[in-house]
Image (tube, rainbow, N blue to C red; front, side):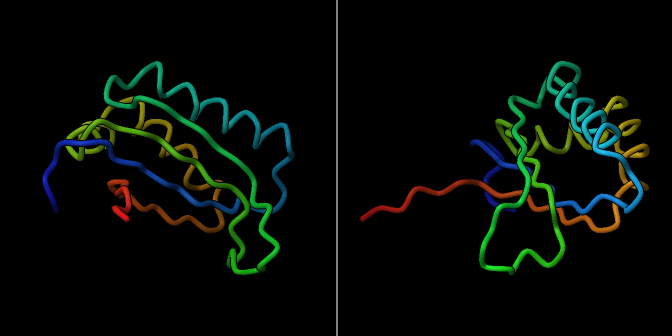
Length: 109
């Protein structure tokens, strides 16, 4: 992996299992958002539902974006007990999941 310092984005694309209510999904999202208060290396959290008109989302319906100060911050997050507990609860509720970590790069024109 490239240099470990510098902002890193953690993206999770998800499709929740059929049968979950909107209230249940909202509760999972609130618990995910609360990780920013529990995991020191997690600096921010945002989420949204797919609104694409291109029809290339491959069934994914929700996007979750977390920000970390470094790749080490993500490594710390992955093993943090609160994240592990949450992930073990969330992942069985997802029909599809894709996780990508990346370092945002500004384009120099």
